[in-house]
Image: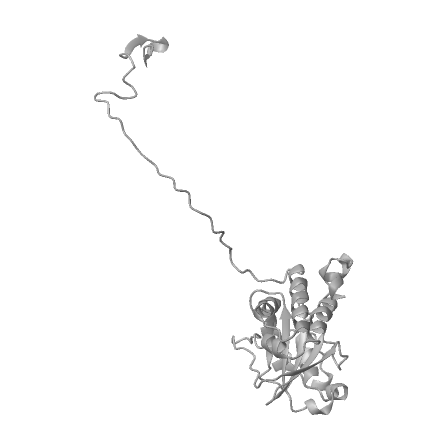
Length: 273
């Protein structure tokens, strides 16, 4: 399917669908020989305090669950990352041109959290990321994993209002007072892939296809102007002034004559040149 998008063989109505974008990018990344690129991508995530997502350890092993049906939401992706020292579980909400859905009014605290309604999409997903019912789908070994929610968008700058509103809702309506909520830009994907050195021929082909796909989707950061190396023209300018004593542009004019005019006015005119 990715090849069809790269070569423009897909109907236009599918081009901007976020589920297709999720499948093409993360579904392809899932076939890499190791998780080093994915780990590098996720480490670019930022929280509201401008702190990056900290991932400890090396030799990451990645597992993905696409569109899991959870208690309050259906996020785009659950991604586990196991390094040689720690296990992580990330819920990733993918956006392209759209924003998050829902927003909760301020000042409403939950008396009964289990029955409280969540309108904010990220708040609902954060609740599900820590819900006991999650482990029925992915296994109880992830109960001790470090968890975070990553909001992946096309924004060039941190979507402060979206993140702050979601943080407020989480704090007001749940017991989580220090939510691990991060933002990641799609532009990071192109940047990281461009400098990534694949370890196998198969990974190299994946890199090539993904870069072409992202560029076709307009996901490419500005890399500055490229200056063309051109030879400078060897031009010289000479200024010569010829001074003619007692001469000017008005030297050819004859003496001014005074002539009579209608309405009792006097008009000064020049004689013939």
